[in-house]
Length: 511
Image (cartoon, rainbow, N blue to C red; front, side, top):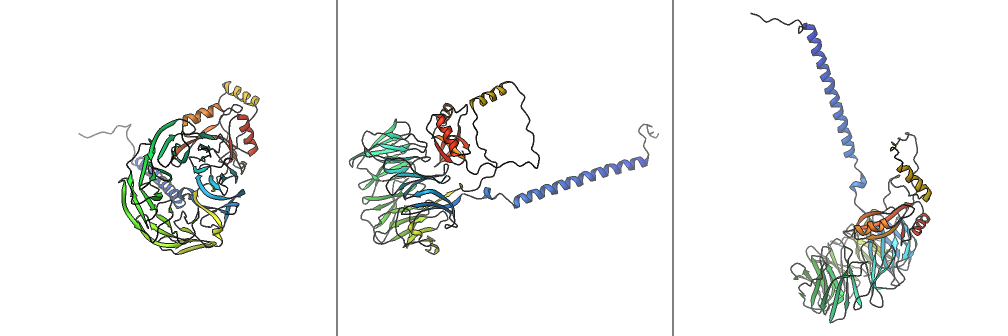
């Protein structure tokens, strides 16, 4: 018995061949199309990987700031080309000692030759005094704040936003120490009894106190989470966050210099009469090693990256170079000792003052790599920063403030329930004007607490506009800046600042 085909399902052999060929061609077309897409995607990926963004792969630029020691225009240059100026100040600066650098604001704080605190704005080029008072024990705090002690023993803070802060301790202060979280430690008293106070400016409340015996506040060092003072033949100290006293560390002689490593794991101690440097381990709380020197060192200076230690020869214009990793004395190098030189550049070279010239050498071998003629007649400060890199056009647009009537009309339009408009794309040949090359920002405060910054921003109202809170990081601690802008001119920023009724500060740059 055979099978019979249904008439509805019957197809001729030619029809089946055509159908098979059609399906095959369709599959081949799909396969070829998919292959072309994959090849195109692979080409795009190879082009992207072959040309990565230079800004993404590059770290911060190594920069040197130079100014005549007798006073003159400050100039910035890339370390790779120190004689090629990329920026200069608008007025003269007489730098005696650098206090600190605020990378977020682009401001260098320093002490001038008259002992006054001052700032250099590396964007606008402004050079101005931080305050009229002449303070002692000047130090830089979080942001661009500067702390010092007046003639009455009061602690004074100079803030770039204005509104100087003052604290009167129970006994006259002799030293101020800043922390990355914005708090400060104030020390005062006499040679037999030293009091220590923990504060969080601008609050006047004292959060903790401690008393130390025979502490010399002028010989001190912050190592990790501890603050140590010299006390006869010992080191006494407190914990930074609580002021809890720590176990004293015994020494063989009275110390004259304490130099911690950047990580704070060790403290290098120079003595009054001993031709050696003691290495104190903060965790073991004792001397773990001693480095012998040809003479008693008078000063110590640490490489910012913690690779080398410099010890000043008291009998000649030379320094001893010590490898921190091995605590080994490597060599002696001729150099005058000033507040800025010898110094380590970001590329690892050591800048030394040799007569009137400035030389760069390899610390390990002493090999000279570059000489700047008459370079030692200038003040040198090395740092890393991205502030001189060009920004893409169109990234920032200036803020414009209309009248109160125009703002009210805009608000009424928004309340009318109008449907959101769909942005119309510009034609390809439309030219969008670039923003002004110079723009300015209005700064009201730099605070440690976000809630305080937002409360301040809410309280400031200029024709219905409120500042915004921008979070940055300074010295590892979060800073919340209350800013408004950018503005097309300094005059516009000043006008809005006066209208706000609050203390303000205008700087050139972007929020």
